[in-house]
Amino acid sequence: MNVKSILDAKGRAVATIAPDATLAAAAHMLAEKRIGAVVVTGAGHSVAGILSERDIVRSLAEHGAGALDRSVAETMTRKVVTCSEQDSIGQLMESMTDGKFRHLPVVEGGRLVGIISIGDVVKRRLAEIESEANALKDYVMNA
Image 1 (tube, rainbow, N blue to C red):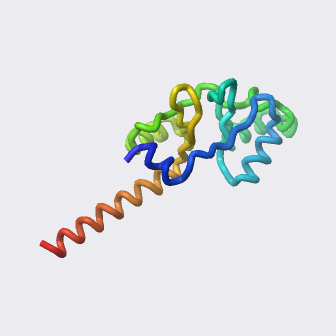
Image 2 (cartoon, one colour):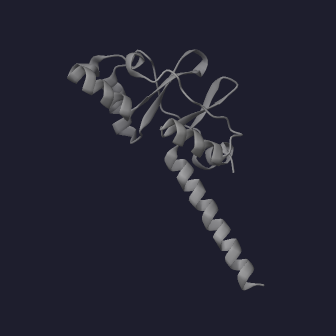
């Protein structure tokens, strides 16, 4: 199983925001869409950064309520780890665990084509385990 199979099942829609948007607008978007991160896009739909709930909380802790008037560009994570459609679920789990993040933008040819969350990975992995268990059960019953 790979990233492409997850995107084919869940879709390729990605919530994005401009770097000059305010943190208040970003927080509203996260709440409205019930998501944990938004990808900050630059020219040509490239990934300029990522802004997560954690980034917003850190900014609020550092700057107080005035942080909500700051731009997304001032708060976003700039060094974004991405993946490709060919990456395996194992690679995703390792990247997310090592980097302690929950969202990976999917990039092909320098363009954003999807996003994978830890929830997507767990859901797919549980489906794989259930399928393997059923195959073993069938094998034992028919042996």
